[in-house]
Image: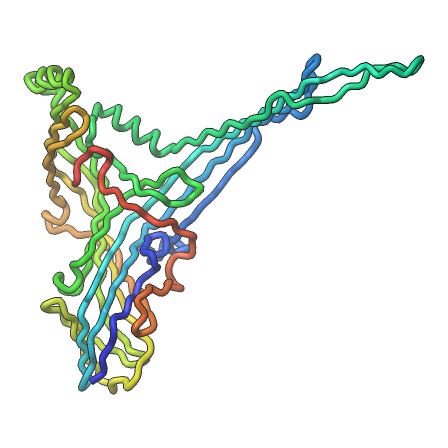
Length: 373
């Protein structure tokens, strides 16, 4: 019997969809990763402009920064077990799946002002007596202004729908890049379900739009008018949205050059068989993953009570409409491969995955004070 110590395989470490597999590889050769563009220019520039006894230098510059990750998925699996008599048995110690698309757009402005004042000095030199002048710095400062354009749009949407604390169309997921103030997108993350779900990991990035109908119901509108004094509000109504379910399955496991297929999953363990010979001292563990990306329309309801703008008591649920009707448009399956040195517990970056420079993601699943959908 050959024992296989715990081995981590991942698209990147730390895990990030910016270094994951493209959900739709046919969309382009960039696959996935962080795609960033920057555009900078000068609004105006004044250099050493003399005005009476003063000299002014001033400039204003701008920079537009855009970043995009995905649509992609990122996966991490920690496996350990043994192989004997052409049979492989692995325990899934840990599993994690991230999927979706993230984007950011920011505007940066910089204003530089320098003001000098002239200082005159009388130099006595008989018939050659004269004034000399020197410039002394009176002021020198810079003003920087950063604007997260997506956040501005987000707040306008909230204001337009008269929502207080409700989750709106997009979620904030900091940080896509140090150049961007924040990142926003359609994102989901799941963990601990691979073996118990028959060897599948499923994440469902969703865009949800709650429609508050309380202003249309006179008694509730009057109640909200009374609650406004207490900085509180009741809201409820339908939810509509778009879902992009992503399913990742494990197809084969390879120890060096020996491939194990016909995988089975039960009681947190994975089994497989080979027609070849068990390796005697393998050094590399590889897995082949299949993924599909689907599309669905979501419909649901929500109820939320915001108390003194600090607490929320709420409920929401959604149903996938197309799936309920037996319609499941999917792209794929697409095959992806991950590998690492047996016994290594740090994920090796995938050479076929995204090529961009990703940030570390602290995931926030809802807007501050919003619903957990």
